[in-house]
Each structure stands twice: as structure tokens, then as C-alpha cells.
Amino acid sequence: MNNNQSNNKRIAKNTAMLYFRMLLIMGVTLYTTRIVLRILGVEDFGIYNVVGGVITMASFLSASMSSAIQRFISFELGQNNLLQLNRVFGMSINIHILISFVVLIIAETLGLWFINTQLTIPTERLIAANWVYQFSVLAFIVNIISVPYNAVILAYEKMSIFAYIGILEVVLKLTAAFALNWFGFDKLALYAIFIFIISLIVRIFYGIYVEQNIQDCTYSFFWDKKLFNTLLNFAGWNLWGNIAFVTYNQGINILLNIFFGPAINAARAIAYQVNSALNSFVANFQVALKPQIIKSYATGDNGYMQALIFSGAKYSFFLMMLLCAPIILSTSQILDLWLDTVPAYTVVFCRLVLIETIINSISGTLMSGAQASGKIKLYQGLVGGLLMLILPISYAFLYFGYPPETTLYISISFAILALIFRVYIVSSLLIFSKMAFLKKVLFPATIITVLITLTGLGLAQYSEMNITSFIVTNLVLIITIVTSIVFIGLEKKERVFLRMKFLEIKNK
Image (cartoon, rainbow, N blue to C red; front, top):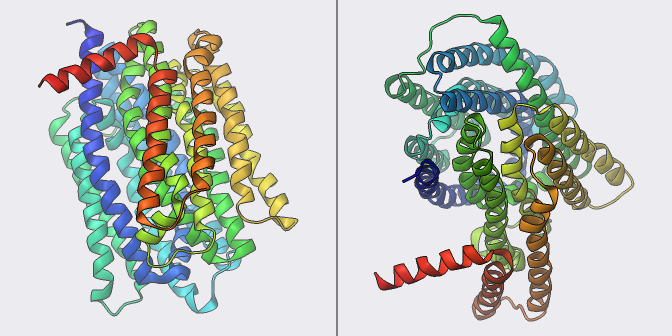
């Protein structure tokens, strides 16, 4: 068996483990949201998400470092340079300790002022909102310190422990949701305390696992100025990209709160909860691909790396279309079954967020390719600059009286523009043909999108609020999606492989 076949099997095994994790997490998370929304109510649920969202705006610091650490660790693994690998791990912990201090200072000054003076929060809930804020700060700092350990686990492709700890985390969050009724304390504040305690428990488990099972990554304090500058330079451009993403994402959340109040934040939070559950299908697939993309770049196997980027982008799109299209068609019915109370605008938010996610699914392996090259200045500069424009344009539309869903129409438009920029930039970094990506990925994706959109619009005319209509319309849509993928999306050799696997399973 050649090395690429072995890598493909590893990717398949890791993907399977991540999907096992994701299915359990998705089910438990969606049920937890239902329980928390019922106990807290729409207004407190909205307050929790917008207040907690203010501190997650600082997540661009840890997210940028996480990508940098995983890239350098995976690269050193590809080069089999274990001494440098351990130095990268040690310096990454030092950097994250510094980041935690920076976040704490900003949070307790600028952040605290913003929470108490700028957000739309009922006066009687302001004390509870401050409890939420303080424990969100603590939980975020704990998560910052966990970043190097998570990056090591992903770079070493130890997906089983990643899966088990992830499952433990959501089970603890479900337990916390039920426990809200066990105490007489303010439920909104109590939920924030529980989330902090869970973050601390998860951090301890990750630390113990890495220290005991990955001997190449053991922490002892040292300082390497050159390595610090290298990590920070790479992370700096990642930082710009993450600032752009978090600014427009959480910034829109804050704008909606200022213009429409906390109830609209509850609707948006539910939409992104649905999106997170579905996006995890693709995210797990791309997480399994990323280390192999970086390692193949490090070893100079450009053909295999390009194949991973192309196939990863295409299959990510197919998977998201298969998952999201039926939910877009039947959003109202699904939300009524899932939630006791469906806040206003939740249906339209869900549909538009999922459409944006389908578009962005193509970009995941392109981003991994850019990071593998280490030359991310142009990529992050241009794409980040595009994303930064979403917030001021959204503000302008809301200021002139446009409805809240306008912000998502703007995001979708910029997602399409960002995809075009990504293809152009990454093709120049990794020296692959833009026309090849267009022919193998974007063209079939566009044709499939048009066919499924037309089918969905036709089925919507006959969709009724009963179980028979729900089953029939979604069955027709799913058959259309699968048929389109097989005959338009797959190449001939992929259809032959699929047919062989089907016959193999049938014979067994």
C-alpha cells in the first residue's frame, strides 16, 4: 500500500470518528437549546447570546493563534523535526498566557463599559447580564489556554480523544440546562456559571491527555524570540482574517440588538445553532483533511495536496447541499417540532444562514491550502478586507429602516465575492489551474444549485403543514439532490468507484 492510500485510510478513519462525535453532539446540543430557551425565555436567551457574544469578539486572538500552531506543528510532523515541534508547542503556550492577560484587561475596561452603556438590555436584567459577562470572560480565558493542546491533538490526528471530550462537554451542558431548575439563584447568571465550570473541566482533560500521551509535546518554560516572531507574524495575518470574521459576525449581532432589542438576538442565536449543527458535518470532514494537506505540502507532494483540496471542496459542497436544502424547504415545520416557542424572524434567519454556509463550504480546503503554504498575507488581507465591509454596509441599511434579514443578504453576497478571491489567490500560491477548479468544482456546484433551487421552489407550492406533505416533498428533493450529485457532480471514475462500493456492500 502506498503512502497516499495509507493517508486516505487515516482520513477516512478520522472522519468517521469525528462524525460519531458530531452526531451525538448535534443531537444533544439541539435538545439543550430547546431546554435552555424554555427555562430562560426568549428575552434572557437573547441577552445571554448577545452579552456572551461581546467577549467572543476577542476570539480572533485565540483563533488566529490556533491556526498558526496547528500549521507549524503539522509542518514539523511532516518534516519529522520533533525538537522544533516541542519548541513550537512550548512557545505557543507562552503566547496564549500573554493573550489571556490582554483579553482580561480589555474585557474589564472597554468590554465592561460597552455592556453597561451601549447594549439594549432591560434595566432589571442588567445585574444578571453582568454575571453572564464576567463568567463568559473567565470561560473564554480558560478556552484560550486550551488552544495549544487542542491544536496538538488535531495535528497528531488523535480524533478519538477529541471526540470523547467533545461528547463529555455537551453532556455536561445538557446536565447544566436541567440543573437550572434545581437552584433558587437567577437562572441566567447560573447558566453562565455552569458554562464556565464546564470549560474548566474540559481544559483539565485536554491538558492531562496531551501531557501523558503525546511525549513530543511537553511544556517547560523557555523563550525563543525568533520563533515568537515567526509564530506571531503568521498569526498576525490570521489575526486580521479572524478580526474580520468576528467583527462582522458578532458586530451584526450587536447591531441587531441596538436596532431591534434582545428578542431578535434569540432568533439569530437559534438560526446559528441550527447552522452550527449542520456545518459540523463539513467542519469535521475538513478537520480530518487539514493535517494531510499541510503535511503533503511539507513533503512536496503537490499532486496529492491538490487532489485533497479539490475533492474536499467539492464533497463539502455536496454534503452541505444534501443536509441544508431539505431544512431550507421545511424550516417552519422543523422549528415548530423542535421548539416550544419560535421567536419572530427565526425562519428567515435559518434559511439565509444555511444558504451562506453552503457557499462557504467550498472555501474550507482552500483556506487550509493557503495556510499550508505559509504565505497568507495577500489571502488574509484581501478576504479579510472584504468581510470587514459587511458591518458598515449592514449598519447603513438598518439605519435607513431595512428589515433585520437584510444583513444576511449582504453576507451572502460577500460570501460569493470572497469565494472568487480565494480561488484566485490560492491558485497562485499553490500553482494550480483556476480553470481546473472552475471545471471540477464550481461549474458542477452551480448547475446543481440551479436544479435544486428550481425543484425546491416548485415543491414549496405544494408544501402543507402536515406530515404527509413534509415526507413527500423532502423525499422528492433528496432524490433530486442525490441524482444531480451522481450524474453532474461526480466524474466518471468517481461514479465507477461508487458503483463498485455499492455492489461490494450489496454482495456482503
